[in-house]
Length: 106
Image 1 (cartoon, rainbow, N blue to C red):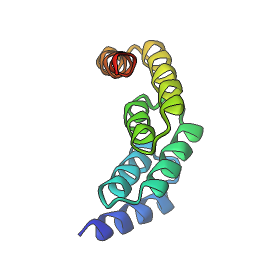
Image 2: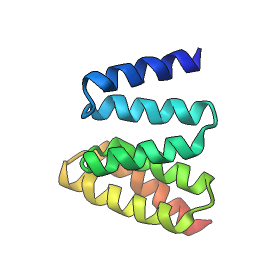
Image 3: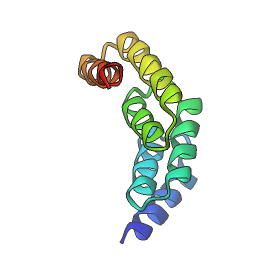
């Protein structure tokens, strides 16, 4: 089932490789099946192609933490906070701030 979703997303991306939502969805699907390196690479590609896609920062940082990359996660949260302020996404800003503060507490 997951493989079919991945194949579908990859096909959609062939038609529109700049679709940030599709790239984000693909990264999430890779995470679901435990293909964390592919998920990380997909998030990073999305970040390079659309750095203002604020939704990616929370999930990328969480994955970096899962992969024992705490310094990268902190950088990602901080960049996400910067982007959330820039695009005035206050919900994302709140989530990113909370996640970042929880790292400082741990």
